[in-house]
Image (cartoon, rainbow over all chains, first blue to last red; front, side, top):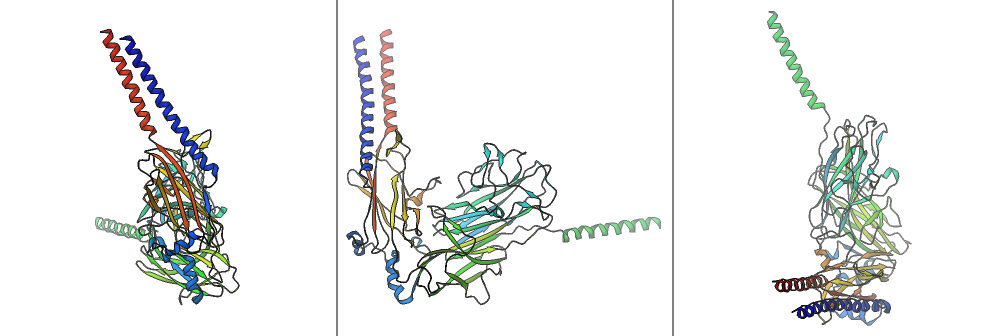
Length: 253
Length: 335
C-alpha cells in the first residue's frame, strides 16, 4: 500500500513538473517567434507611387471615387481652379455640430471664509451618429473684483495632492483656498473623480486652454457637469468676485 | 378720534411697507440663468485651391438657447497631438484671406440671434496670387458675448464658442504631395521578459492594436485601407480604416471601424481592440493607400495567445485533486 502511495506521489510530482515544463517551452518558443520578426526589420514596407499595388486599386470594384482626394482634384481642379468638400466623408452626410451650456451665469453665492461654495453647469455636445470633438476651457482672469482683488486659482489640498491645470487632485480641506473645477459625466479627462479638482488655465498669464471634454466618437447629447468650487481665507478682502470662462467646442478634422 | 388717527397711521405704514417691499423686488438686480445652445454646419471644409482663386462657403449657425449676441472670426489652428485634437491660435496666420459676403454682417462684429433663429454666414475664402503652395488650417469661430459685469454677485460667466475647421491646400497643379510613413503598428501588451516586450496574451484577453501614421508631406492626406487579422489556419477578419485626415507634417492615431464600438474610455489611444478567444499564433497586417496613384504602405506584426489563466487553474485543480486523493488514502490507511 505504501509503495502504491509513493508511486502516486511520484506520478503527481512528475505531472506537475511536466506541465510547468510544457508551459515554459511554449513561452520560450513563442517569444522567440516574435523576436525573430523584430530582428528581420521588415515590419514596415513602403512602396513608391507607381507600383503595381497602387495601380491595382484603380480597377478594384470596392474602390470609392469620393474617397480619393487626388483624383477629384485632378478632374475638377483644372476647370474651376478649386475643389471643395464639406463634412466628414466617413459620416456620409453633413451633420451640424452642436454645443450647449445649461447656465452661463454661474452664481457662487455669498462667500464665507473656510466654507467652500460650489455651483454647477452642464456642457452638452451633439454630433449626429459619430464624429470626433473637443471642448476646451480657459479663464480670462482669476476671480477678481472691480478694484483688482483676486482669489487665486486652487492648488487643491497641497503637498502630494497639489493639482495643476492638467492633473486633478483631491480638494477636501477647508483650509485649502482658491478657485477650481471638477468634471463628471461623459467624455471627461480620466483624472477627474469625486472631490478631485483642477485650477483653470489663466489667459491673462498666457496659459493655454485645456481639454475638458473630448471623444473620438461623440454620438448624440454627450453631457458633462462642471462643478465650480471656491474657498476663501479669512483674510480675503470683501467684494464681488467675477470672471469669464471661455468654452470652445470644435469638431476634429 | 385719537384711536381713528392711530389706525390711519398703521394703514399708511402698512401701505408704505408693501410699496417698499414691491419696490425692492422690482429694482433688485437678478442673475438670470441663461442657456446657450448653438449649432454650426458644415462642421468641416476641405478645399484645394489655386492661387488667385476664391470660393464662398455658406455656413448655418442656429441658436437653440436664449437670445444672444454672437460674433464670428477666423483663427489658425495646428494639430495638438496625434489623436485629432487641435490647438487654436490667437490670430489668423498664412496668406489666405477671409471676409463675409453677407451685406449686413462682418467678421468680428456682433450680431443678434433670437431663440430658434438661424443665421447664414457667407464666408469668402481667397488665396491671393503668389500664395505659397502648401496647407493652411483655420477654424471659423462663432462666440457668444457675455453680458458684462453683474454687480453685487460673485459669479462665473461662461462664454460659449463653437467652431468649424477649414483645411486649405494651395496648389497650382492640383497635385498633392503624399509622403506617408508607418510610425507604429503593433499590439499593446504589458508582458515583458528582461525588459523585452513579448507579444504574448492570454486567450481571453482583449488585444489592443495601435497604428500611428506620419504624414511627412506638405499636404494633408487621408488614409484608406484595412487591418487584417489572420490565424494559423488562414482564416481572416478585416477591419476597415476610418479615413480621417492626417495634416501636413504631423502624426495621427488611425482608427478602425471596430474601435468605434469601444464603450470604456481608454487612457491611451487605440486603433482597434480585438476580442474573443484566441489560441496560437496570429498575424496582423495592414495595407493603406491615400487615393489613386498614391503610395501604398504595408505593415505587419504578430502575437501569440494561450489560455495561461485556464492552465494555472487546471494545474491548481490537479494538485488539489492529488492532494485530496492522497489525504483520502492516508485516512483509509489509518482506519
